[in-house]
Length: 180
Image (cartoon, rainbow, N blue to C red; front, side, top):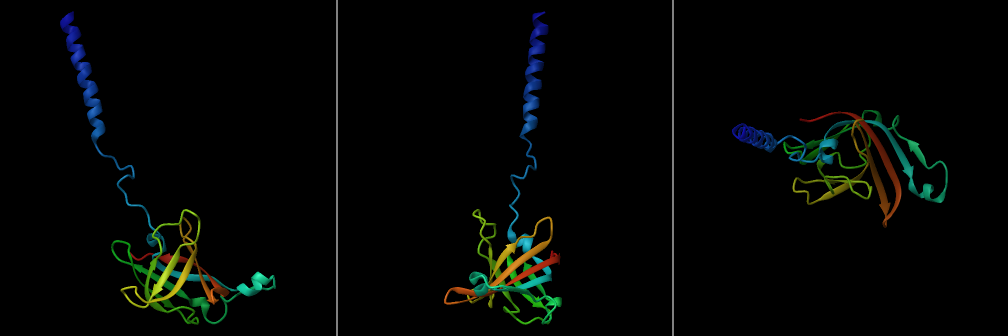
């Protein structure tokens, strides 16, 4: 009986060791996955679905109307913008298409101030450059709507004088074709 008890004890010990050794295999629980960046969400070709010109001075002064839709005017109905990235999802170039007036440079290079959303909820900013070294800034676009499950991107271009904004343009873009 004692021999049988020792055999069962050894078998029980082996089964416990075997069950714990199965836990050493790595599983894909997201721990080894790089976090999704804003570059991955913004990349691609975007088509304009709406643009509002906002009179910031009138808005502050309480004068109405203080905004107007420009979508059906000045050729904005065929406006598009493409944000390109490299194989590592790092920003490279951008280009604007269509016949709309050039409110910012029609082509160049871009990056974000931060590849991740800000914890305080402030808008990420796209910096536009004229050169690949990204040494000569030519504009800034605030990201007002980040694409997610709904592929819509909101951008805001603000013009100011002596640090005081006087007019801004709120772009609403959607239906991108992702560059892979």
